Image 1: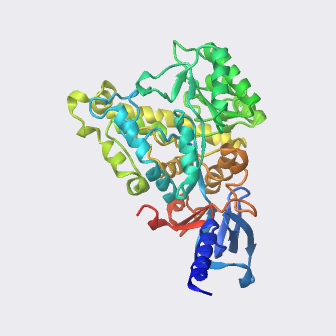
Image 2 (image 1 turned 30 degrees about the vertical axis):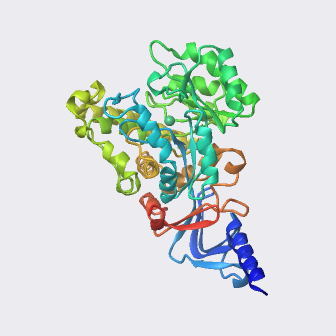
Image 3 (image 1 turned 90 degrees about the vertical axis):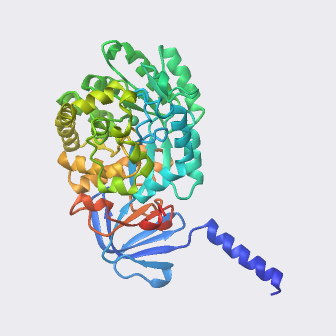
Length: 467
Ligand SMILES: [Zn+2]
């Protein structure tokens, strides 16, 4: 071989390596498959390229395993899925000027520019937390670009997205020309807007069903109906924000496929539970977000060690409201700061309803998918999921049930062809896996004790991801 052909041969072999991840096998670990609750000790998971080739117990023929990775003493899970996040929001104090206007401290334009320039950072933080897929349930049209960017980025979760939220109300302060929330006034407008969304091939259409004395449940209902009918015509599922029992009931009766929050105003009744069961509606509880606005504004933020370590430090630093000059604080924050006990009491009242509701729906066999609403003020992209797990535990879910909510059930919410190949450790599924140092079935707190994360067949030692 002359030098030139030698060079070519090396170049070709490097090319074939990078084009296709090598065959690797995770040997001797305990495989946990929350989909059916099965736990396989001393198992071998063979990964060929981006897919799981097989899962077997006991000694295997070494020749068929490729590169072996010793996982004895470790626990192997499908990658987690956070089914409710928003990439257009950073989680910092300035990300929702419609809720707390701090434009005089940092303009919303600057905030959005920061968000757009930190996408890779957010992607990596999800992976660090073992979250290998996320569902963005609503944002500006540039959300579709985010999905494309994630698809082209190696160190990123799989991303499903909805476009702008269809709503009864508008939010001018979020409108920089491509608003995340669009006010729709008639069924015809709704159908037109869904057709415009359909061109972008959204994974979901999102309705922001906001009800107050000026917007009763029934007045927006024809728009909900038209949105769902038109979406279903295009074979697109519909996710609805509806936090009151009667709003949620109306949404499901009209055909909503997903409820993106818990019901928080009153206990769910038998008829509602039956309705969800009959319609196979998926519910995402988003418990963590219910405490974070209030706790941030009243300077009572309770970030977990995971959030403090793996959250974006700039975002976290911004959440200290005492650093904002007094004369620039919006009334909502001033009030919360003056009376933190009232804020905490309100949060407790919300959980007194939301947690038993979750337990009731779980016991009734409703498909619950874990999600955080990360990106909202104080809800940290990535590690917020571990606070969500704590709250699901407080509601009375077992560790295995929580793990099922964030893997197999969450994959159903993700949907599509990708959703049908994530959330389980099975032949032919994507090799999106987490290797843990301690057993999460014993204690859900171990779910964050991450040794390594595998996304699309590529293995990342956990402490290398954010370096
Ligand atoms: Zn949300």
